Image (cartoon, rainbow, N blue to C red; front, side):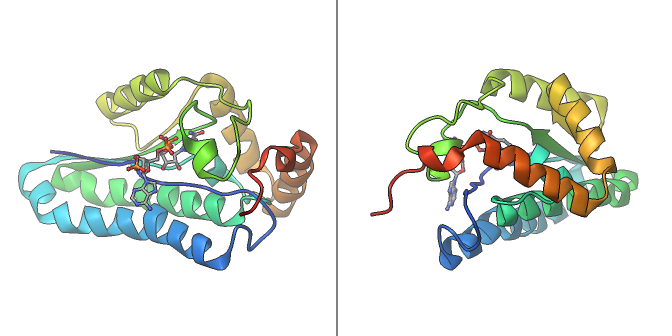
Length: 184
Ligand SMILES: NC(=O)c1ccc[n+]([C@@H]2O[C@H](COP(=O)([O-])OP(=O)(O)OC[C@H]3O[C@@H](n4cnc5c(N)ncnc54)[C@H](OP(=O)(O)O)[C@@H]3O)[C@@H](O)[C@H]2O)c1
């Protein structure tokens, strides 16, 4: 059996932008739905064996200002998946956290940008290939793209307040706010 928990969205801006309700909707989809769907299928996964592939993010490796809630939801998915893999492996169920960096999809529009942020580094196809490769290799986590893999190793080693401060400066330098859709 294969369960892919892929649905998710992000947002950009100082908390609580774009609104507390949207932050809570993000937690519902990015976190609660992953746990809920996995829980519903767990008896079948345990009975038949299988793989749960959860799409986390490179953003899950460090606290990320201006994407605070999104990055925290992905840190949850990353840690939950790796822990679940260790626990469930003896029962014939594997779990993998797929952690892409920027991928060219509808993600930036759903996050409130009027157009592409220009950060779309990897194609969805290349990302999916790497996800399949990780599943075949039985890896509990996979950052897709070599450059992003290196970045995840570096940022996970930094003290969290440093990572947040450096992240804030780097993200501000991108001036993404000028690409946001105007509020209705
Ligand atoms: N693209 C990136 O740069 C990037 C980087 C790292 C991680 N990710 C993660 O990759 C996953 C897929 O995103 P994507 O890049 O493919 O973005 P996308 O093109 O916007 O796709 C998002 C998916 O989530 C579903 N979705 C959105 N809001 C929903 C809601 N409220 N309830 C149920 N389903 C909802 C969408 O369904 P509909 O099509 O029906 O709306 C769509 O299938 C997400 O978990 C995202 O966080 C993306």
